[in-house]
Image (cartoon, rainbow, N blue to C red; front, side):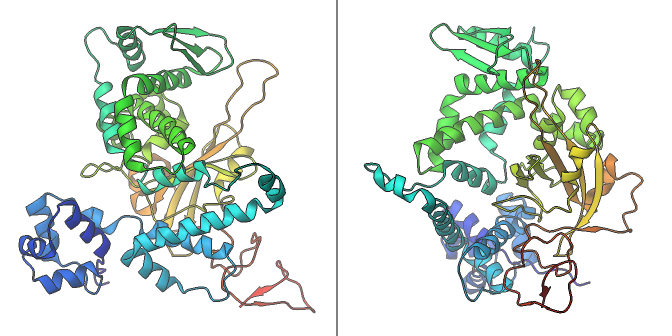
Length: 463
């Protein structure tokens, strides 16, 4: 097969603007003509080998980043949004890809409009109540604001990640990250106690006392300890990152700050380079990594999906957590596989079966409608209450990557990678498979035939 041409106009334009160079100056440094650069930035011509070499040699740019970015995410999100809107003629997939690559700002604006439309639509049932309150208005969901922030940052926040890695460097007298955190909090007058309390973490600023619950696992206690470290010792960094994000509401900013503190905690427990090296040496064995870093399996799986530091990236993983109803409560993908913004995951995915086999890893070879093949690992991660009578919180996680990376995963051993792959999708509304026996609603943009004299698995036939 001939090599695939690389169209990365938006990314190329972003690099030039980041360097504060005019097109003429940038073209000169890349060794190409001004018209040629203009054509590349507008995706009229592919990025040439000469430009790739110049980007690496002149600017030290990781050229693998040109082939990545938000395009696939934007295309998936726009398709899902179009499935939710009253539109008589849905644009073809090729047009959506063109918009995502050539005009990503316009694509994001469209998604903002869809989000506003959906929120308004969902609140129509309570409109009377809203109108009855003085000054009532419909506001964007802060949770969705924060989710999209991490989604389009590739779930990697460089400044916070590096600060956590630096914090995890142990000094003399510090045996592990937990003892280091307690010692460093003591320097600013904060004492740490472990008590059988209901809150996982409670900080009394007046007394300078942090109480962690003894009813949860040691991994959770360490994580919550480091969250408080981030809130107390890394506040300027967190606030500066939030300033750049420009959230629309104070509530979204508060949620995002806690999210950044959680990010710091995970990155401090599993420092980037040490964790990356260990993951490669252990062939991404989640249990071995959990034991080495004193983390839970869920924490390890989530951390693996964030190893996207430019120049030292890990395997591009997807990570998702679902509840028993199939609702996605955490999601991230550094692969081409994207998740539905609303609703649950494909019912054919093995993550749903994990609830039936607690304590066991499930392996699955899956193929999406675009022909991409993945190896997916699923396991339940139910959270025990710690005392009699408290409810068990049940979740399952899935971690996976493209099958091309299977050799680096211990979980691929013994699988027939040339065998049968389970067909899965993203959301029924945008899944192109016509013969799926688990389909819940017809696919977007397809005509239907309703046969009166016969009935198959579905009550309609997708044309």
